[in-house]
Image (cartoon, rainbow, N blue to C red; front, top):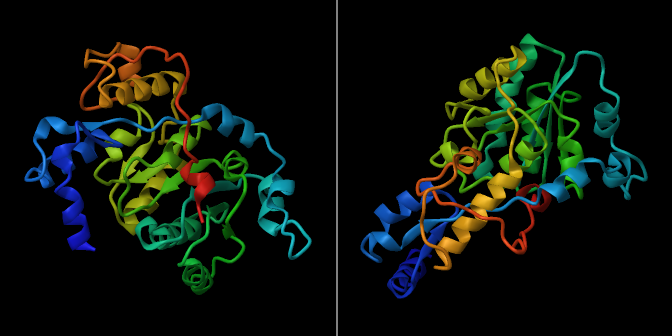
Length: 292
């Protein structure tokens, strides 16, 4: 694998631009791949977010979307979300159940919070190779009925819309699309600190915590105290900025200073003005929708 990657890197000098999905990753690649390409070739272009699709999904019929055809019924966690007990706070996470997402850290952090405040629950949306292991962790900690592993879901946005706070516990991310989705849904966000975390959240939104069980637990406690700001996400301004960065990356637009309101919506290492495009580029499937 390393040999094949090195062969790929040797081709980098032949490209006009090498584009990463966040300014921080571009900085990392510029430094670590310096022997393969000059620094000016490394640029960044943020992913766009299909906000209208997300908002439409959020209005979907959750019972219909989550209906278990094998069991012939709606899972218990759906009814719990649709008719929550009074005063219950719901934390949600969406992503593939794999090592780099580290949902075990989140479950163990939640266990601390739930012991202090039983009127809390955690919903983890997604499937993957660690599902059985995480189910064992939940059982070992005695969290059945408080932590729900929903498996793969056709409409994760309808689930997210019923939650109170989104929590990300990954070991590393590029530009986490699921954070953009949570922002579109006006969810307060608690995320662990990783290399590109500073690019993932607009100024004045969310809470970045240490990458540890105690750090995530403290972040959830902060939300329960009302200390995690949601903020209004200007997704239209963000998309204009992202498209502008894409145009710059392909050489179709020069680098110029960004309008203040656009830079606030989507801060980046190399700001630029991003006019409304004639037509938006096709958006790839979201991380939430692709969790498996």
